[in-house]
Image (cartoon, rainbow, N blue to C red; front, side, top):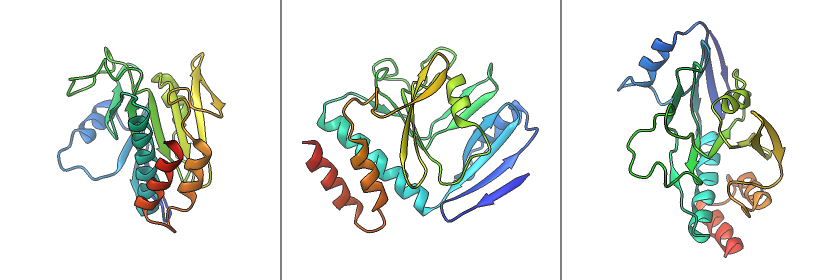
Amino acid sequence: MSTVSTLAEQRVVLDSISWATYCALTEEPKRSRGRMTYDQGVLEIMSPMLSHESAKRLLARMIEQFTLLREIDMRSSASTTFRRRDLQRGFEADESYYIEHAAVILGKEEVDLSIDPPPDLVIEIEITRSAVDKLALFAAMEIPEVWRYDGRGLTLWTLQNRSYIQINESQVLSGFPIPLAVELLGIRSEESETGLIRRFISHCV
């Protein structure tokens, strides 16, 4: 077991964890608030601190305002536990969204990745480096697009031929103002979240 702690995140990594144990932990009613990532026997539990959560929620609010203003249908799947037994992999994103496939899962209370599509967009706040190769995991689980914020910049990745290439503009949310989002994330501790969202909306209308 290894543990890494910062002011943004605490990560605990456990090796040689069986699939059955991982599933039991994700289904534990009284489980901790940590987000679990499982990759073929390696289990990472990330407990977010305020800096992590403030970045996550601000970016999520910008995405939600953007889809509202542009009348883009979407369904938030937030930190849903997504698992693929056949791949021995699973994850709980900081935020995730169904956009292209929003209508496909409309009305579903549970998502089964053996028959349902994965979310179209996954958001990862990663101030400290994960012990799991998240991009490899997401590629295996066929996530079309991933956004990663490391406390300084926001990188976008799109899936092509089972691996990711970095892109400058979102293909899932065309026209989303990435440079503005990075600017606002960078000053989130200096201004109120409401004020930052007002600035975002004024740019998008």
